[in-house]
Image (cartoon, rainbow, N blue to C red; front, side):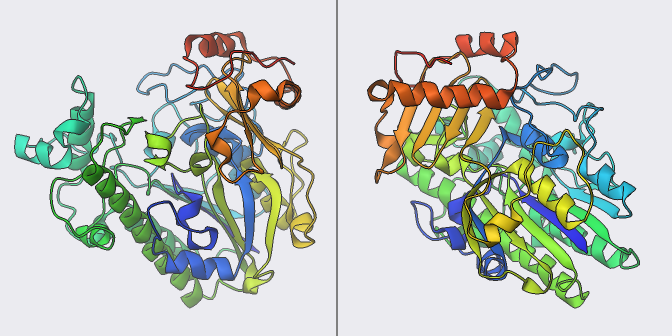
Length: 470
């Protein structure tokens, strides 16, 4: 059996039709929806560690990255994206390496430029890896620079903040887009077209494992204008930038344009995902290939007055992820499961379906049998790490605090609007019990540098003054 893993960066779960709609209205995803009808749909899937690179470490190895031991990276030519933002440890075998050793031809098609920086090694184990350049600040081009008129168009003055960092960011982003005049030139189309070409070129393989990594719909939200016009026809300055800050001072017009551009990029991803799946059909691969569809995390776009993503305070629009598995011949179509699963469980599922024994150190748990039998699965909770904060989610509770136990937020998931009220002070026993689970999942004590980092970060508004204790 062939195996394909497709990851869309920053794709919100509620922007995939089978899961509902975001607060600003329905997004057109007909190809995602068609895929869902032929798939096992997991309704409670979560990352293990975030953001971009820690999430992929967990998926590519099946091992926990949390609590970031030996994860305080300061590598030349890189920026400190978050704790754990580094290469895959050399002593951890990757999924591609394991499958390659067991007779699979392996391929990686990606434009997630963080994976390909000189200090990284995320292509390890792939027989072919193709890096499609130009996302964000990837230095693909050095000129010509933007005129002031172009800067004013792409980065409205109220989005610039203090200093030159945001102007420099948009300069490189748009400069990289010079000469891209057709839809096929944009990022998600290039990735999915190249992935379809890989399928054509590797028809002689007895069995293959292909990983497809689309940085879209991560910001900057660049797509041909007709996609934005599906959601907002008003003309004016663009807004493709995420400020990672409160949106109270952002005009309604710019927030609406932000949402329209994000929605447009999601729909563009959907269209070219449809191209990829049609290529599979034409090549006769739908009957002998398992396709796994997921995201690393979502993105807040005005939710709770925030534009960006963060691990503290943690919220569903960022932490819930879509996860759908289409089996050969659409076997198990129509099944849904609300059991807890995490990114590193995907690795265990792939190895099980490939009939390959997993390494003894793997932390992921294969979930297929329980999901198809509507059983609750082996996870009673999930622990999700981002930076110096940890989130623990059960059937009833959502705990978010820093690893030193401070800044506690506790929400009751049984209420209609659970994230509106922090109940930490009313349920100290629950807080301490969930924090104990977080420390148990860490297996060992939190590294000193991470505890120190937690102490340097401000508490979230409305958090409890009482620290969690284990």
